[in-house]
Length: 268
Image 1 (cartoon, one colour):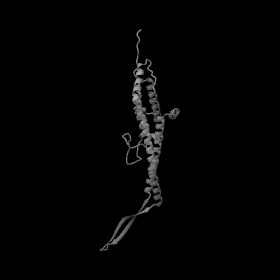
Image 2 (tube, rainbow, N blue to C red):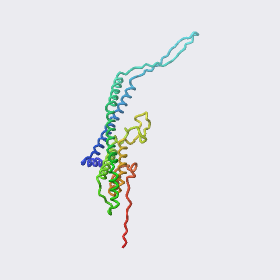
Image 3 (cartoon, rainbow, N blue to C red):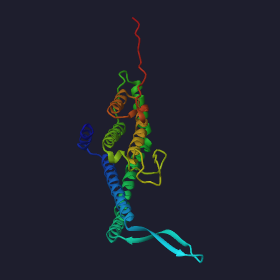
Image 4 (cartoon, one colour):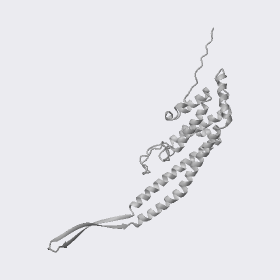
């Protein structure tokens, strides 16, 4: 509930980055739905294929008399194959549905997911690559060191970075609460995706999806830039995000940092 409220708060002041992340989130959900449908169709096809042919096995006993007059008996098995028309039609229909799903819906969902992912990623990296961003962060950090109160006037660059962090932590919370985003139908590429058996599409263990890994990676990049400012307000903001995020210790321990406390002595 709190994650939904947090995203509704972000919607009250929409920005380009939030729209890109929402598009990536929606595309990833649609991709998982298509993958689930494709797996269900494969189950139907495999079940129908097993019942197309039925084999009747009968024991046949043959007797004969040899030249010496002894009776010789031989027993063997005779198998007859029968085709089941109903299962055959079900198999044809299932194969057509699988072909349509993979060639149209699944391919489109994969393209939309990857394109929306690249748009969000390029938006972040282009912002971090701005030549005046490093100067703005350094200026904000110097202002804190020279300020007697340790407070700073937040520049537009720093404020936008903080908004990026707010959006990413919001989607981190939503993805943790949504099994289709966090869960089983993630890509096979990468060491973080552990499959029990690559030949069996259903023998997978719980693992992080591509969406969650991207959100955490982008959050780490932006937080690293924010920590260069070193202000108490920024550090408190990150601390509050860490407190409200489940299992933050698995990937965000470095986010909790505080500047050394300066104690001034006055001789009387």
